[in-house]
Length: 133
Image (cartoon, rainbow, N blue to C red; front, side):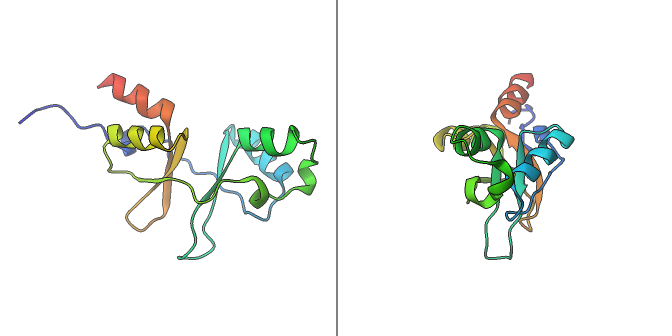
């Protein structure tokens, strides 16, 4: 048996989960991102049969600003990604990195056993956290 500590997603995830409604405008989402100093917001599930969404600064850049659309006239649901990859907080970080690489995404929503969002895991934090081990 190895005495090495297993690095889990929950060890390095960001525990603050900032959310925005899918019906909010991109302008409102941008204001939330500025206020909380984050580059992504989780769009909550509407019910138990729905999935999480995620809006990133890069989504806004690509699908709103680059296309010369007015942020106050575009809703979050029009540019967000949905469904998004979710990870269990107890998952080994090395497997989470593999999933992010396989699906070519930079972050995922971390959920608890009841599928409630408890954090955001980013490739950067998972890899750098792994390097500390």
